[in-house]
Length: 301
Image (cartoon, rainbow, N blue to C red; front, side, top):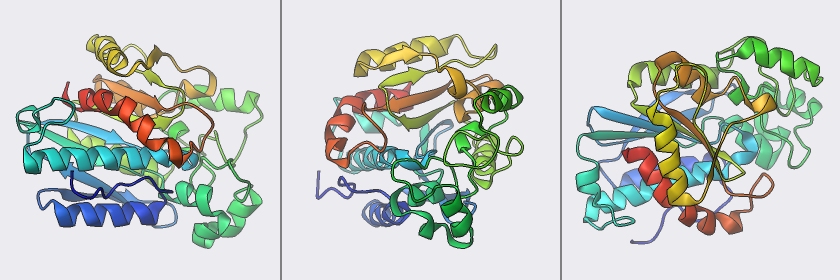
Protein backbone atom coordinates (compact mmCIF):
# COMPACT_ATOMS: atom_id res chain seq x y z
CA UNK A 1 0.00 0.00 0.00
CA UNK A 2 1.21 3.54 -0.72
CA UNK A 3 2.21 5.71 2.25
CA UNK A 4 -0.30 4.96 4.97
CA UNK A 5 -2.54 7.83 6.02
CA UNK A 6 -3.96 6.18 9.14
CA UNK A 7 -0.69 5.82 11.03
CA UNK A 8 -0.74 5.11 14.77
CA UNK A 9 -1.33 8.38 16.57
CA UNK A 10 -3.29 9.93 19.39
CA UNK A 11 -6.60 10.25 17.60
CA UNK A 12 -8.53 13.32 18.67
CA UNK A 13 -11.29 14.94 16.62
CA UNK A 14 -8.79 17.05 14.70
CA UNK A 15 -6.78 14.00 13.72
CA UNK A 16 -9.95 12.32 12.47
CA UNK A 17 -10.83 15.34 10.34
CA UNK A 18 -7.33 15.40 8.90
CA UNK A 19 -7.32 11.70 8.04
CA UNK A 20 -10.77 11.93 6.44
CA UNK A 21 -9.62 14.86 4.31
CA UNK A 22 -6.49 12.97 3.23
CA UNK A 23 -8.42 9.79 2.43
CA UNK A 24 -10.95 11.67 0.31
CA UNK A 25 -8.13 13.42 -1.54
CA UNK A 26 -6.54 10.08 -2.40
CA UNK A 27 -9.72 8.11 -3.16
CA UNK A 28 -12.24 10.12 -5.15
CA UNK A 29 -14.93 7.45 -4.78
CA UNK A 30 -14.96 7.82 -0.97
CA UNK A 31 -17.85 10.05 0.04
CA UNK A 32 -18.59 11.88 3.26
CA UNK A 33 -21.93 11.95 5.03
CA UNK A 34 -22.81 14.58 7.64
CA UNK A 35 -24.29 12.63 10.56
CA UNK A 36 -24.83 15.35 13.15
CA UNK A 37 -23.10 17.59 15.65
CA UNK A 38 -21.88 17.08 19.19
CA UNK A 39 -23.02 18.95 22.28
CA UNK A 40 -20.24 21.51 21.76
CA UNK A 41 -20.87 21.69 18.00
CA UNK A 42 -18.18 19.44 16.55
CA UNK A 43 -19.18 17.69 13.36
CA UNK A 44 -19.91 13.97 13.49
CA UNK A 45 -18.86 12.75 10.07
CA UNK A 46 -19.60 9.52 8.22
CA UNK A 47 -17.79 7.90 5.31
CA UNK A 48 -19.51 5.97 2.54
CA UNK A 49 -18.10 3.32 0.20
CA UNK A 50 -20.19 1.69 -2.48
CA UNK A 51 -23.73 2.34 -3.60
CA UNK A 52 -25.32 -1.07 -3.16
CA UNK A 53 -28.57 -1.81 -1.37
CA UNK A 54 -26.98 -4.10 1.24
CA UNK A 55 -25.91 -1.45 3.76
CA UNK A 56 -23.79 -2.06 6.86
CA UNK A 57 -22.77 0.50 9.48
CA UNK A 58 -19.61 0.44 11.59
CA UNK A 59 -19.04 3.13 14.22
CA UNK A 60 -16.53 3.89 16.93
CA UNK A 61 -15.47 6.19 19.76
CA UNK A 62 -18.78 6.25 21.62
CA UNK A 63 -16.61 6.65 24.73
CA UNK A 64 -13.98 9.31 25.19
CA UNK A 65 -11.13 7.10 26.35
CA UNK A 66 -11.79 4.61 23.53
CA UNK A 67 -10.42 6.85 20.77
CA UNK A 68 -8.29 4.05 19.32
CA UNK A 69 -11.52 2.58 17.93
CA UNK A 70 -11.80 5.61 15.63
CA UNK A 71 -8.33 4.93 14.24
CA UNK A 72 -9.36 1.29 13.76
CA UNK A 73 -12.38 2.28 11.66
CA UNK A 74 -10.29 4.69 9.60
CA UNK A 75 -7.54 2.11 8.97
CA UNK A 76 -10.18 -0.37 7.81
CA UNK A 77 -11.62 2.32 5.54
CA UNK A 78 -8.19 3.04 4.08
CA UNK A 79 -7.45 -0.62 3.40
CA UNK A 80 -10.84 -1.11 1.76
CA UNK A 81 -10.30 1.95 -0.44
CA UNK A 82 -6.82 0.83 -1.41
CA UNK A 83 -8.06 -2.62 -2.39
CA UNK A 84 -10.92 -1.22 -4.42
CA UNK A 85 -8.64 1.27 -6.16
CA UNK A 86 -5.79 -1.14 -6.99
CA UNK A 87 -7.42 -4.56 -7.18
CA UNK A 88 -5.08 -5.86 -4.48
CA UNK A 89 -6.60 -8.43 -2.16
CA UNK A 90 -7.08 -7.74 1.53
CA UNK A 91 -6.73 -10.79 3.78
CA UNK A 92 -7.34 -12.93 0.65
CA UNK A 93 -10.53 -11.00 -0.16
CA UNK A 94 -11.18 -9.76 -3.68
CA UNK A 95 -12.81 -6.54 -2.57
CA UNK A 96 -14.35 -5.65 -5.93
CA UNK A 97 -16.33 -8.88 -5.83
CA UNK A 98 -16.98 -8.76 -2.08
CA UNK A 99 -18.31 -5.20 -2.25
CA UNK A 100 -20.58 -5.81 -5.23
CA UNK A 101 -24.11 -4.76 -4.28
CA UNK A 102 -22.93 -3.47 -0.91
CA UNK A 103 -22.60 -0.13 0.80
CA UNK A 104 -20.38 0.40 3.85
CA UNK A 105 -21.00 3.41 6.08
CA UNK A 106 -18.47 4.29 8.79
CA UNK A 107 -18.80 6.79 11.61
CA UNK A 108 -15.32 6.72 13.15
CA UNK A 109 -16.01 9.11 16.05
CA UNK A 110 -19.52 9.30 17.50
CA UNK A 111 -18.41 11.29 20.57
CA UNK A 112 -15.80 13.85 19.45
CA UNK A 113 -16.28 16.08 22.51
CA UNK A 114 -15.67 13.17 24.87
CA UNK A 115 -12.57 12.09 22.99
CA UNK A 116 -11.09 15.58 23.05
CA UNK A 117 -11.84 15.92 26.77
CA UNK A 118 -10.23 12.54 27.45
CA UNK A 119 -7.09 13.59 25.55
CA UNK A 120 -6.84 17.33 26.18
CA UNK A 121 -8.92 17.94 29.30
CA UNK A 122 -11.76 20.31 30.11
CA UNK A 123 -10.29 23.19 28.09
CA UNK A 124 -11.49 21.45 24.92
CA UNK A 125 -15.15 21.61 25.97
CA UNK A 126 -15.79 25.18 24.84
CA UNK A 127 -18.71 26.82 26.63
CA UNK A 128 -19.04 23.69 28.81
CA UNK A 129 -15.41 23.76 29.97
CA UNK A 130 -16.16 24.86 33.54
CA UNK A 131 -18.84 22.23 34.12
CA UNK A 132 -16.59 19.53 32.61
CA UNK A 133 -13.78 20.64 34.90
CA UNK A 134 -16.13 20.47 37.90
CA UNK A 135 -17.13 16.93 36.90
CA UNK A 136 -13.51 15.75 36.84
CA UNK A 137 -12.71 16.27 33.20
CA UNK A 138 -9.03 16.90 33.92
CA UNK A 139 -8.48 13.59 35.71
CA UNK A 140 -6.36 11.38 33.42
CA UNK A 141 -7.96 8.12 32.34
CA UNK A 142 -11.44 8.94 33.58
CA UNK A 143 -13.55 10.56 30.86
CA UNK A 144 -15.97 8.44 28.82
CA UNK A 145 -19.03 10.70 28.59
CA UNK A 146 -19.90 13.54 26.23
CA UNK A 147 -19.38 17.20 27.16
CA UNK A 148 -22.66 17.21 29.12
CA UNK A 149 -21.52 14.36 31.33
CA UNK A 150 -23.80 11.79 29.67
CA UNK A 151 -22.52 8.36 28.69
CA UNK A 152 -23.66 8.04 25.07
CA UNK A 153 -23.75 4.25 25.21
CA UNK A 154 -26.18 4.45 28.14
CA UNK A 155 -28.44 7.00 26.43
CA UNK A 156 -30.21 4.90 23.80
CA UNK A 157 -33.84 3.93 24.35
CA UNK A 158 -33.36 0.25 25.15
CA UNK A 159 -34.10 -0.72 28.73
CA UNK A 160 -33.22 2.84 29.74
CA UNK A 161 -35.53 2.88 32.78
CA UNK A 162 -34.00 -0.36 34.06
CA UNK A 163 -30.55 1.06 33.49
CA UNK A 164 -31.41 4.24 35.41
CA UNK A 165 -32.49 2.15 38.38
CA UNK A 166 -29.23 0.18 38.20
CA UNK A 167 -27.24 3.42 38.00
CA UNK A 168 -29.01 4.85 41.06
CA UNK A 169 -28.18 1.73 43.05
CA UNK A 170 -24.54 2.30 42.11
CA UNK A 171 -24.77 5.90 43.28
CA UNK A 172 -24.74 7.36 39.76
CA UNK A 173 -27.43 10.02 39.83
CA UNK A 174 -26.23 12.84 37.57
CA UNK A 175 -23.66 14.06 35.07
CA UNK A 176 -20.15 12.74 35.40
CA UNK A 177 -17.18 11.21 33.61
CA UNK A 178 -18.90 7.88 32.92
CA UNK A 179 -21.97 5.66 33.14
CA UNK A 180 -24.79 8.20 33.62
CA UNK A 181 -27.50 7.57 31.06
CA UNK A 182 -28.76 11.13 30.93
CA UNK A 183 -32.02 12.88 31.91
CA UNK A 184 -34.03 10.96 29.29
CA UNK A 185 -33.39 8.36 26.57
CA UNK A 186 -32.10 10.02 23.43
CA UNK A 187 -31.47 13.29 25.25
CA UNK A 188 -28.05 13.80 23.63
CA UNK A 189 -27.33 15.18 20.18
CA UNK A 190 -24.82 12.41 19.53
CA UNK A 191 -27.40 9.75 20.33
CA UNK A 192 -30.03 11.40 18.14
CA UNK A 193 -27.55 11.65 15.29
CA UNK A 194 -27.01 7.89 15.30
CA UNK A 195 -30.74 7.19 15.64
CA UNK A 196 -31.53 9.43 12.68
CA UNK A 197 -28.76 7.85 10.62
CA UNK A 198 -30.24 4.41 11.22
CA UNK A 199 -33.75 5.57 10.39
CA UNK A 200 -32.52 6.77 7.00
CA UNK A 201 -29.89 4.11 6.38
CA UNK A 202 -31.92 0.89 6.38
CA UNK A 203 -28.85 -1.02 7.53
CA UNK A 204 -28.67 -4.78 7.24
CA UNK A 205 -26.72 -4.83 10.49
CA UNK A 206 -24.56 -2.55 12.61
CA UNK A 207 -21.25 -2.86 14.44
CA UNK A 208 -20.18 -0.66 17.36
CA UNK A 209 -16.46 -0.63 18.18
CA UNK A 210 -15.45 -0.30 21.83
CA UNK A 211 -12.44 -1.26 23.91
CA UNK A 212 -11.32 -3.38 25.67
CA UNK A 213 -11.67 -7.12 26.42
CA UNK A 214 -11.56 -8.97 23.06
CA UNK A 215 -15.23 -9.89 23.29
CA UNK A 216 -18.21 -9.79 20.93
CA UNK A 217 -21.69 -8.95 22.20
CA UNK A 218 -24.54 -9.91 19.88
CA UNK A 219 -27.76 -10.32 21.86
CA UNK A 220 -30.43 -8.01 23.22
CA UNK A 221 -33.94 -9.08 24.09
CA UNK A 222 -36.52 -11.05 22.18
CA UNK A 223 -35.97 -9.37 18.80
CA UNK A 224 -32.41 -10.66 18.42
CA UNK A 225 -32.36 -12.50 15.06
CA UNK A 226 -31.37 -16.16 15.05
CA UNK A 227 -28.53 -15.49 12.62
CA UNK A 228 -26.81 -13.12 15.06
CA UNK A 229 -25.38 -15.96 17.14
CA UNK A 230 -23.81 -17.61 14.08
CA UNK A 231 -22.44 -14.30 12.80
CA UNK A 232 -20.81 -13.65 16.18
CA UNK A 233 -19.35 -17.16 16.22
CA UNK A 234 -17.81 -16.65 12.78
CA UNK A 235 -16.24 -13.37 13.86
CA UNK A 236 -14.94 -14.97 17.04
CA UNK A 237 -13.39 -17.83 15.08
CA UNK A 238 -11.57 -15.38 12.81
CA UNK A 239 -10.15 -13.32 15.66
CA UNK A 240 -9.83 -15.49 18.73
CA UNK A 241 -12.22 -13.14 20.53
CA UNK A 242 -14.82 -14.50 22.92
CA UNK A 243 -18.60 -14.42 22.44
CA UNK A 244 -20.17 -13.01 25.58
CA UNK A 245 -23.06 -11.16 27.17
CA UNK A 246 -22.50 -7.78 28.83
CA UNK A 247 -23.25 -7.58 32.52
CA UNK A 248 -24.34 -4.93 34.99
CA UNK A 249 -24.43 -1.36 33.74
CA UNK A 250 -23.37 -2.49 30.27
CA UNK A 251 -26.50 -4.57 29.77
CA UNK A 252 -28.93 -1.85 28.60
CA UNK A 253 -28.99 1.53 26.89
CA UNK A 254 -26.37 0.79 24.24
CA UNK A 255 -26.42 1.48 20.52
CA UNK A 256 -26.51 -2.16 19.44
CA UNK A 257 -29.23 -2.82 22.06
CA UNK A 258 -31.41 -0.09 20.60
CA UNK A 259 -30.78 -1.18 17.00
CA UNK A 260 -31.75 -4.80 17.71
CA UNK A 261 -34.83 -3.78 19.68
CA UNK A 262 -35.92 -1.21 17.08
CA UNK A 263 -35.33 -3.15 13.88
CA UNK A 264 -35.01 -6.83 14.77
CA UNK A 265 -31.76 -7.00 12.81
CA UNK A 266 -28.28 -8.01 13.96
CA UNK A 267 -26.27 -5.57 16.02
CA UNK A 268 -22.85 -6.18 17.52
CA UNK A 269 -20.54 -4.56 20.03
CA UNK A 270 -16.91 -5.54 19.52
CA UNK A 271 -14.56 -4.86 22.42
CA UNK A 272 -11.19 -4.39 20.75
CA UNK A 273 -7.89 -5.22 22.41
CA UNK A 274 -6.96 -5.93 26.00
CA UNK A 275 -5.62 -3.75 28.75
CA UNK A 276 -6.76 -0.55 30.38
CA UNK A 277 -8.40 2.34 28.54
CA UNK A 278 -7.07 4.30 26.84
CA UNK A 279 -5.25 1.46 25.13
CA UNK A 280 -1.67 2.44 24.22
CA UNK A 281 -1.22 3.65 20.67
CA UNK A 282 1.99 1.61 20.50
CA UNK A 283 -0.13 -1.55 20.48
CA UNK A 284 -2.41 -0.44 17.66
CA UNK A 285 -0.83 -2.40 14.81
CA UNK A 286 -0.93 -5.69 16.71
CA UNK A 287 -4.50 -5.07 17.83
CA UNK A 288 -5.61 -4.17 14.32
CA UNK A 289 -3.85 -7.12 12.71
CA UNK A 290 -5.67 -9.50 15.04
CA UNK A 291 -9.03 -7.87 14.37
CA UNK A 292 -8.77 -7.20 10.60
CA UNK A 293 -10.38 -10.38 9.27
CA UNK A 294 -13.11 -10.20 11.90
CA UNK A 295 -13.93 -6.64 10.88
CA UNK A 296 -14.04 -7.59 7.22
CA UNK A 297 -16.40 -10.43 8.01
CA UNK A 298 -18.52 -8.06 10.09
CA UNK A 299 -18.96 -5.87 7.03
CA UNK A 300 -19.43 -8.58 4.42
CA UNK A 301 -21.67 -11.20 6.05
